[in-house]
Image 1 (cartoon, rainbow, N blue to C red):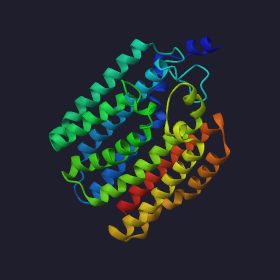
Image 2: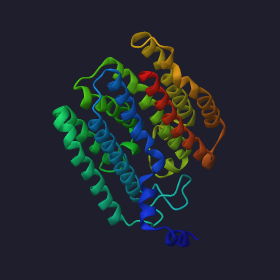
Image 3: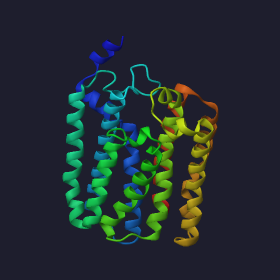
Length: 299
């Protein structure tokens, strides 16, 4: 049955599957929020914003490809995994093809990134290099971050601070307190996508030697972590309101609160494959919050 499925999926569709389109909102939100602050401050550079978005998407796709390949090589991803289908484990793409895809994607992101280095100098060069290295080291290398309880920290830093602040910096050539505080909810909600993923896969990961925080500290910790990041994301709105922009429009992300409450209930009640829906909605929440937050900054 699995072989039949493999034969009916084209190479193009296999690459789309491997790129994990549903995760790409995580690469878009830091750029949108960082650029909204640049517009507010009168330093918006549209070409820089577009190139930053391309680099962010390419690094995210490259990281997904590395994850697909090395989770298979580590024996973590199997054909009967609880989560969504993976291209290498399913035989849709060979290890050689996946390696070529990884080189191509990260190489292209580096080439595009040279324009941002031209604008932002050595600081942006270092950010770009560290982002690519972190994307590879997330599941590959002698000390893969995701296998040693550091995946959550890496996601929070790179999707929050690095993505948001880096986007602003290539346009403004400086870092402000507002863009720093604004990076926190972006990173927190994107990290929650990983939290759900690891919470769902904790038993599989434990048996395969993948020591995520959910494996190390248990399911209760993972649920508390998820709720903490939710609360933190909405609490930051008050910091932004009282410190930077005393406009009630900054509270537009509160419109996403009903979805947040629903998700908290889901993570406390669902198990196994049921959490795939929670994962999908958590990704949608991060996108919805980011769009509302950017709108609140601009209006």
